Image (cartoon, rainbow, N blue to C red):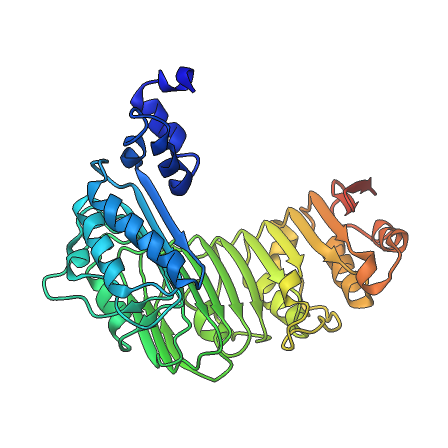
Length: 422
C-alpha cells in the first residue's frame, strides 16, 4: 500500500475511477493521504435497488454529507439508480451536480410520480448527455435552455401531457441523438420535430398511441419498433440524409414509413405488411436485410428487390426474439417475380442467409437468387438443421448442385462454426 500511496494524486484518482464510487469511498479510511482522494472522482454512481428504507437512509445521508464537498471541478458522469427514493432528495443532488458542471446525468427511479428535476436543471450549460428512466417529465420553466445537450435517452418516462416531449426538444438547440422507449399509457400523441437530430430510436409497445409526427430532415440513423396494434395516424417527413434504417413494424406503419426513407443506404426490415405500394425507388440502397418471420416476407422481398436497382448485399435472417411472438409465423411459398429484378442482373455481389432452415420455400428462394444473380461473388448460408430437422448435407447438396448465373460465385456453408465450401 505504501508503494501505491507514493503515486501522484492524478494517477490514484484514475485507479479509484475503475473500482466504483462505493469502493472508492471506502479507501478514505486507509490513511490521511487517501481520506479525500475519492472526492476528486470525475464519475459518481449511486445505486440503491433495495426496498429497505434503512438502506436508502444510509445512502441518502452519505450523499448529503459528501456530495456538497465533492472537489472535482467538473462531474463528467453522475448516475442515480434509486428505488423508493425521495424526489426532493434527488432535486437537491441534481442542483449540486449542475453547480459542478455535470456533463452526463443518468437517473433511474422506481417509485412515485413526483418530479425529480429542479428548475435549475433546465438551464444547465454543461450537460451533454441525459438519460432518464422511470421518472416524471414536467414542462420546462420559462427561459429554459440546455445549450450543450446532444444525447437524450428517455425510457419509460411519464409525460405531463402530449406536448411535453416536444417542449423539451425545443430547448435543446444542438441535440443530435434521441432514444425514446414510450411506455406511458396516458399519452395519446407526440411530436418529434428537430432539425438537428441525426440519430433517432423509437420503441412503441402496445400503448394505443393515436398519432405521432416525426420531422427530422438531418437524420442519418433511424430505428423504429412499432408494436402498437391499434391503428394509428402518423406522419413521417422525408429524411433525405438517411444512411441506415431499422424498421420493425407488425401492423400499419410500413407504407407511411417506407416512403420517407427512400434515400437509405442500409435497410433492415421486419413487417407484417406484405407490400407498400408502387412508385418508390431506392436508388442508394446498397445493403438490405429482411427478417423472414412473416408469411408475406417473400412478397416484401420481391418488391424491395424490384425497387432497389443498385443493391449490392442481400441478407435474410430470422430474429430469435421473434420465435415466440403470436404475430410471427413462417415465410410462405416462394413465387418468382414475372421479371428478374435489375439488381440481380447488374449489382448484387453478396447473398447471406442466417438461420437457413432448408424448407422447400427456403430452397426455392435461395436457388432463384443463385440462378439469376449474374454478378454474385459470394453466397453464405448459415444452416439451422435443428429447427426443422432437415439434414445439413441435404441442404448443401441441393444448393451446391443448383445452377449459378455467376461462374465466380463462391458458395459457403457454415454450421456450428464448421466451414464448408461448395
